[in-house]
Image 1 (tube, rainbow, N blue to C red):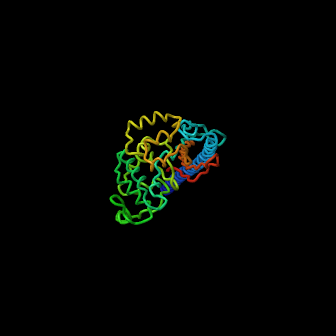
Image 2: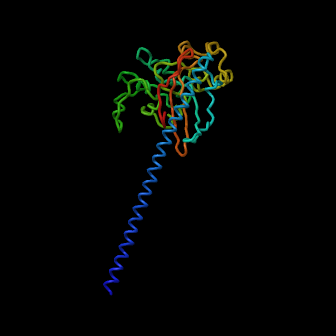
Image 3: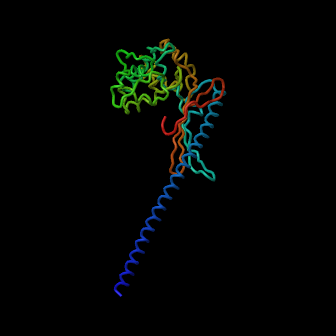
Amino acid sequence: MIGARRARGVALITAILITAITGSLAAGLAWDNALDVRRTMVLLFHEQGTQVALGAESWIRNILRDDGIDSQTDHLGELWASELPGLPVDNDSVQGVVIGKIDDLQGRFNVNNLIGPDGKVDQDILEQFQRLLVILDIDPRIAGITADWIDADQEVGFPDGAEDSTYTSLTPSYRAFNRPLVNVTELLSLDGMDKASFDILLPHVTALPGRTLINVNTATPAVLQSLDENLDASAIEGLLSLREEGGFLDYAQTFSTLLKPAMFVQIVDKSSYFQLKAVVQIDTVRVTYYSVLLRSPNGGPVTTIVRSLGTL
């Protein structure tokens, strides 16, 4: 009798253990399955968000193309310059919202302009960049360091500059780029550039292929002021009141007496390079999409030259 009761007790304990193990395995499998489903949905939503952003880009290309045909100038009062309102994304498979903004990149200082067609540092542009940095309360030595970063030689600029001898001594070490910037975020690699200074500088600078002119109709106040050492805050306030949203009526007449000849030839009132920032929200997934758009002159096509997700 005792042996039989002991056997039944062992069998009961064994059954309880088997049930517990089976339940634990089932819960684990259910949890893994739920994670797999969620992971799949996130990937699906991300892909859908990317496709929506590409659709927004196509729409913006059409807007810029039509604007190039209809208008001889570019200014902040045009359709493309207004921030895109939140547009619903709603169909059988996708529900969400997309918002966007277009910036005229020729309203910023193109750091690649620092190097002239002869491959040497353009002194007038270097001085403009120095003025821009001073206006933004950033160390003006960054201008010379930037020029050294993108020029082709290994000669350290005087008095400001940095080449491989500086960067290879860092941890981790790296070398100077010695060619035009592809992305403006490369400025974070410069000797002396910190994140706080970069964040202040970012709205006023860009990295475009080749040399570009500054559109005074869309330039930031700081970039406008950097065009000449004699332009102070009050002068810029007067220029902005003249510009308003429709741009300068005659930019050449307005700036001919304000700028030196070397800088006057650096300005224009029409642009070719624009940047789209589109943010798409699908469920809990947010996709931030950037693209740089090049508009051909005289109503030509608008092409995408750079795309990126998440960062510039």
